Amino acid sequence: MITITLQVPSMHCSHCTQKIQTFVSEVQGVQDIHFDLDSKSLTVSFVPPATKEAIIEAIEDCGFEAR
Image (cartoon, rainbow, N blue to C red):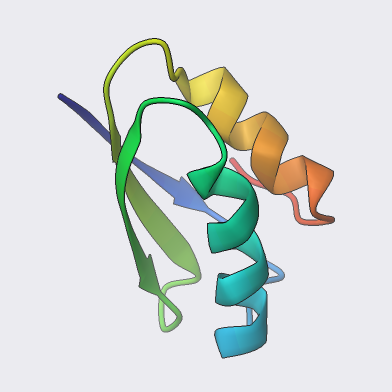
């Protein structure tokens, strides 16, 4: 399993996390998502075929920037 942490600077509230969770959960292979609103980051654990790029794309598709 691969685990990455991404910064999402515009993520402020639980509504933001719910929206991101909906999109990221659709990426095949995503196993777990943990949000930290204080640091505006999320940690995602996944297995192939999911990739870091696919997860970032899912976050961007719902209107947020991830790095």
